Amino acid sequence: MVQYAVLIYAADAATDAGELEVHDRHAQQLEASGALVAAFALEPGATATSLRGDGVTDGPFVDAKEVVAGFYILEAPDLDAALRIAGGNPVIAMGGGVEVRPIAGGFVRPPSGS
Image (tube, rainbow, N blue to C red; front, side, top):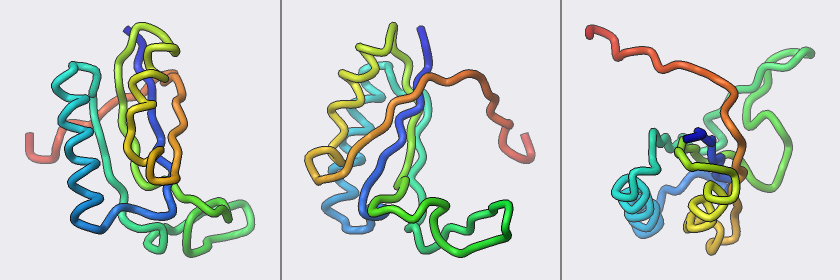
């Protein structure tokens, strides 16, 4: 199986209880399917700090209408399957979008104190 990063683009991070519930339900479905490897929600874009060659700035790295609101890692046999899985993300119906990208490598550090 290949692992894919799914970057969630939205106007900003979900903070409304109803919107959070929709995303939580979607994550539970992905987990039950066995495709979900890891998932992370991010704080609102206003909390971002960007480092660039010309210094440090507050806010998201790219000046854009949407920000990365979260991301998750899924496993799928190929890109077509990953696109089908990611296509069910509720942010798409809410006017946002997702980017699916194969993972080249990485690691996860065990929690501190383990």
